[in-house]
Length: 245
Image (cartoon, helix red, strand yellow):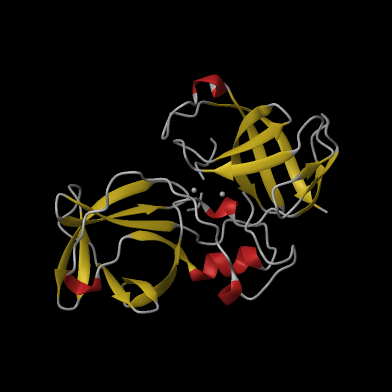
């Protein structure tokens, strides 16, 4: 069974160069996903936005393509005057109500009375506290999953089919894959996808999941139906396993 994988809507992170940099210097390009007017909520220093784990972003910024590094993203927003939170992890995504008490937010939903998890907003970001263990998040400009942040490098294809070797650039360019000129990866649909673009527009759409040394692409059997955000992605057979050289 395929693992349903993210993080936080994965084009490559745009660094000042294609090499790795310090996490504090990461420049995450702005991508607007939501077009609904933002509601306000002021209690507890609440901030609407998208948040990714500092640890996960540090790993991919250093060029590690093993994405299974405890990554997830958080979206905070206001609905009908009440604070809400959405957690997307590699296997699932759940929406929670937020209740402010004792200087932090407790998150709840219809499936539980409450969780022993608190959300604290600080001037430096968002802290997710689980059983006295604090996970630090940094604000990003969209809900893209972790695959958006780093792809640059040369890859070999473990499968017998072509292409046998490709090169992905840090600005979204691709070499060695037929007519493809650029690539991108995002989580605008139900599952994360990897797309190839040619001189006349979109060429192919694949479902993507991480691999210990690179990434894998699976056939999307309904790619012509992916015309709206959050559309269902029907996953077919494994097409490519790319290992970073």
